[in-house]
Length: 428
Image (cartoon, rainbow, N blue to C red; front, side, top):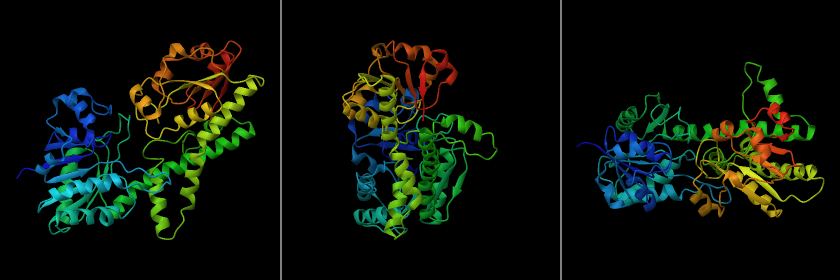
């Protein structure tokens, strides 16, 4: 029988994977969100990762009907793994996906998980659900594999078809099949982890490491602010040493770096170990939006000589540059905090979907034409559009005639450009 693959979850990870797999297999892409499926059938790529042409020309089928995945014999789970309000893992999407698949499993089928989890989740949480709902047993009736996703939204260089992947499986035969599948997916290296737990752990620490490194420079930035030192000037000097790690300070949001460390912290604490370094890094990065907000207000009040701040313009709301993903963007924290001070906030983003911004954050994006008579401009996201199409002179034109304050949170403009326009620049 020719393999048929069902990809469960068609987000930034699942959709590119589905399109790629469809070049080699019969593929069904499933998502419970009917609106997403309607867009895919219309050739609309809501992820900006594959493009309308790839959707229209793909042989992949897209469905929101769970009954249609029964035809598959390989299931790949690419659902998100967020955290609850108390920062503990929210495994509900993963549990729901496992409950969805279980009743359709037949002898010889395989389930591969790509979602980021703490070590042990696949075998301790997902497998029991599959066994109970399928009435089959692991390695007797079905097998499981694990290949953690490494998609970087908006990154056109490191794509699903080129990146190296870590793979593991519950038995040697299953590993052979997982290897064959992902050899079709990527031209990158396939690293075989000795166990599923090791593969799970490797993924969760990748983003935790970045979180720690960014927390380090964020802590420096906070201290240098009070010392009256420009952080970027310090980093430029330190980067002249060959082994200095070139991380930048800033807001840490999104669905990976700001989430994954909590999975590690949770599992470690379950076993009686408090993860001091990762917990401290998370605390530092979580407070950056508040630090930036307070800096904006204090600098603006100082520039206004104590007069009220009427309007602040915000450029960029997505969680990272050149990417439409809004999930866990810390820019919204700054916007809400400024509104708490009864400040009128204008917001622009050339990439974000205005309908999603309004639906999820009750915020209407404004055109650049409306950016006038502001007390300050905050360049919050380093979109290429702002780098290429907005000059220091353009930013000055958005300010009141007697105001000269721009907050360049991503350090995308040279200081000399601001000095030439008699603008005061503040950056993290």
